[in-house]
Image (tube, rainbow, N blue to C red; front, top):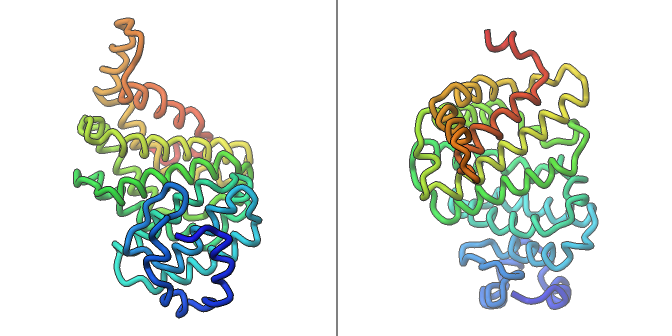
Length: 281
């Protein structure tokens, strides 16, 4: 891929979406942006904009990033299949993670971020059903959760959170994951290590979300109530007792599974300050 200054020279020659399709693929894919490998199925327009964002990550303004994401969002409407969407989304997420948190947090209401909901649900469902994630899916899962965690760490006003984070279908999917984790140890098997890390990162995001809901002291405190009952299943499972017994034996370190059951789940539960008993009775 050309460095950013070369793309500036190309802007005058390729100013429309149609003209982007005329850029030879060799001009786009030879160098790639930073250390990211660009797939041959990546959109030229998306790849071009990813390069701009990557080169200007430390200094790009909210308005410029907004304009680029506007065009990227419109480009997604032209993708013919889910695989093409996932490939391009994977590339976009990589460069967005290099942008300053403050800049990203200022545009969290942008419609582009709504594109993350559907693939996140599909990936969670696939992982929950025991199907292996391919490389693109695993990377997308990891980077969506990393991006969300980064955004939430920077936002203190819950009104600025992406609204789809409390979407019923997403919370239902996460709740099923918790319920199944309380019943099967397969989620902590070695082959699931990266996916489990991503899921725990997602839980950390919702923990921060709940704390911000509590600080608002509003009627919205029960937004995440759907996660409570399945988390309680984890805390009443034999995995919790096994993890607790592991601590009692005086081992110097505990496993990721033990940390999940003994630390991560209780942390979310104790942060919740909504209508707890009303929904669980």
